[in-house]
Length: 93
Image (tube, rainbow, N blue to C red; front, side):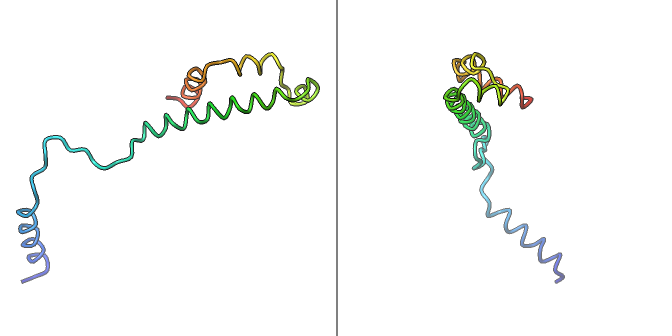
């Protein structure tokens, strides 16, 4: 018996031993969309923390970085949900 014939015979035996595939099959896979949503919220939260830290700088220091206090306050008061949506739009989602 050749190798290919032996392999075919083993395949036939293996097919009989396998259970039938259920109607609804869900592979054991990490929920990628949930992971991306968690990352989006975390990044938005980190940005808000950055804006809070930047507000501690003096007006002179903010001007050196081409930032304005009014714009930082506006960004800081923006809801996290809106920041997440901006990130998703910027990413092209």
